Image (cartoon, rainbow, N blue to C red; front, side, top):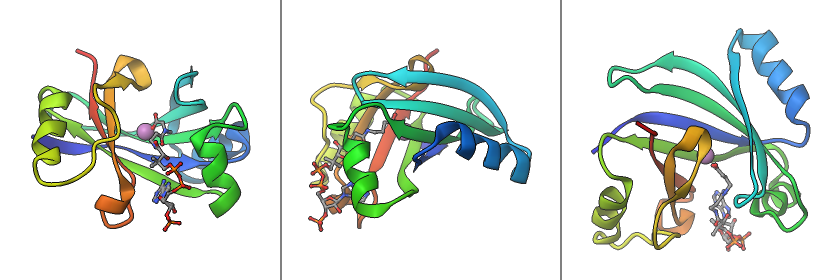
Length: 141
Ligand code: CMX
Ligand code: CO
């Protein structure tokens, strides 16, 4: 089951400046930084709140680390802004993705990849989700 909003992914040009905006404007705390080579991004996670199932909701700020990164392409086309939303699962993310694929939605990966903080992630095609790139996240236990 999808039980929470795990994070909202926001693409930006300058990670440090954007983190500073979220910290100073809203008082959110940057709890984690990570470079994900496979996804071609450097990211900062700002925790917003804890959730009932022991997880948390975050703002995920992402900036490309190379020109051929999917986020570099997106930024060049759209400029900074909301790039994707991510729902958290309470069970196996592949089971969740399989159930959604059965409903005719394209799942982008054959098997889950590594996301923030050791999570397992996959993505749904935005064209099958009314224009929203959608990520599914199983937090590391
Ligand atoms: N949100 C909504 N629509 C999007 C989108 C997004 N983030 N990215 C692309 N699209 C749309 C485009 O606007 C385009 O629509 P039109 O044909 O109407 O112009 C269409 O999808 C194809 O876009 P594209 O620019 O040609 O991009 P690609 O097909 O090469 O890639 C996608 C799109 C979704 C397959 C690719 O971005 C992807 O694989 N995403 C998953 C991985 C990812 O986003 N990683 C970064 C985040 C990592 C993390 O969260 O940890
Ligand atoms: Co994400």
